[in-house]
Amino acid sequence: MADITILGIESSCDETAAAVVRNGRDVLSNIISSQIAIHTEYGGVVPEIASRKHLEKIDDVIALALKEAHCTFDDIDAIAVTYGPGLVGALLVGVAEAKALAYALKKPLIGVHHIEGHVSANYIENKELEPPFACLIVSGGHTHLVVVQDYGKFEIVGRSRDDAAGEAFDKVARAVGLGYPGGPKVDAASKTGNPQAIEFPRGTVTDNPYDFTFSGIKSNVLNYINKAKMMNTAINVPDLCASFQEAVTDSLVSRAIMLCKERGYHKLAIAGGVASNSHIRARMEEECAKNGIRFYRPSPVLCTDNAAMIGCAGYYEYLQGCRDGLDLNACPNLKLGER
Image (cartoon, rainbow, N blue to C red; front, side, top):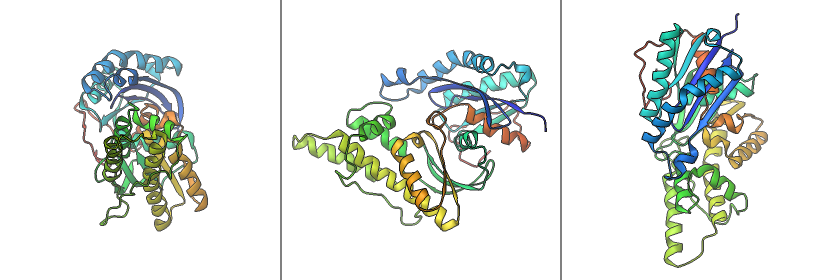
C-alpha cells in the first residue's frame, strides 16, 4: 500500500500544534507552541486569550511542521484536526484552519476526537501495539477507563463521577500555593514528601466499581489545609502533595489492574496529560509487572496535547473511510465514541 501522510492540527486548549505523520506511526515532525507562561499569570487557562494566541500562531506552526518534515502541502494526503472536546473558541481556530486548507488544497478533511488522539499516542512509540487492550485516560478534563476494541472504537468501562484527576491536581496545587500548572508542580513537590504522612480517602462508587470520584479526596485536602490554618499549624507541603498523589494513584491503578484481571486483558496503556505523572507511571509499571500485564505509556511530550497523536488517530480514521465536509464544527462537549 502507498504511504499515507497526514497533517495533524491540535488547538483544543492552550497548545497550538501541528505535525506530519506518515502511515500513522512515523512522526516526521511535531511542533508545539505552548501558552503555559501566559496563562500562569492568571492561575489557569483564560479561554479568550487562548483563542487569540492560536490565531496568532497557527499558520507559523503548520509552516514549521511542514519544513521540519521536509514536506510541502503537495505531499499531504489528508488533514486531520481536533474538533472536540475542548474550549470552543480554541477548537474553532484549528477547525477553521483545517477546513480552509482542505478546501484550498482539495484534500480530505478528518475530524478527530481529542481523547481518541491521546489513546493513539501509544501507537507512535509502541509500533507493536494493536487493539484490543485496556487504557486508562487521565487528563485535566477527563478520567476514563476504557477497552480499546479497535482503532477508533471504545467501550467506556469507568469514568469520573465528578472532578477529573487533573482538575483535582490543579485545585490542590492552587490551595497549597504551588500555582499553575498544578499536575507537574504537585509531582515535583511529592518527590521529597512522605506518601504515608497523611491518610486521605480513596473514593469508591457503589453502583460501578470501575467509576472514579475525586471530589472527596480534594475536599479532604482543602479541609486539612483550612484546619491547619485555623490552628496556626505549619503545613508540610511535600508530605501533603505526596499523600494526595498517593491517594489518587491508588484509585487509578487499582481500577485499571482490576479491569485487566477481570476481563483477561494482558495489555494496559495510559494516556492523557496526567499520564506523564512520574509516580502514576512508576506505580502502574510496578503493578503491571506483578500481574503479568504488558504496560504501554507514551513519552511525557506525547501525553500532553500535541498534533502527532491527532495525525495518528486521523490516519486510522482515514483508512476506515471517515471523511468530513466543510460543515465540520467544533464540539466542545463531544463524548468519546461519538462522531
